[in-house]
Length: 188
Image (cartoon, rainbow, N blue to C red; front, side, top):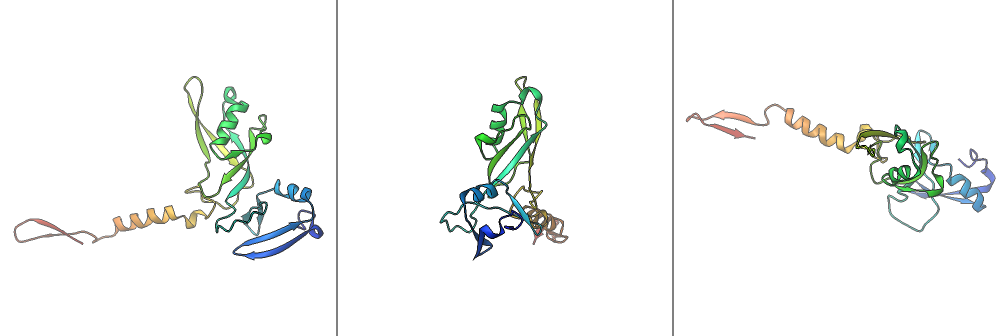
């Protein structure tokens, strides 16, 4: 990645284990420039860069910066305030990043929570419309539950549903036996 950023000779990398790396930049300007470009992709995987903090949580870093675009918002609702309110429901909006003409903003998203891809908004007339939320550079996420931690094929929600479905469809789980007196007994 340092060579892709044009900073091969200005960044050193240390492997910290557990899928984490420490990148040392020679200048604050280089670091800021790279951080604004994320999230990143390498070998069909998304990764994020964050400023170093001495935190040892396994799921750190959990804040991911996304450029988000709102699609389908009716023109009368297309205001600075409304876009900020929509963004605030997705995460922390970077105030200076709002582009009303494009309907986009930079948002810090908590990756421990599911992403939201649509929202219902109500106009002053009481009409309700569903808007679409597009995350720029989003790659490999679960389209079932919205989490960034896995893909659809590995979704725990799908596993639970399919296990329940399998259990209810399995023949012979409840067998009815009519006893000598004509009563129906349930046996597992």
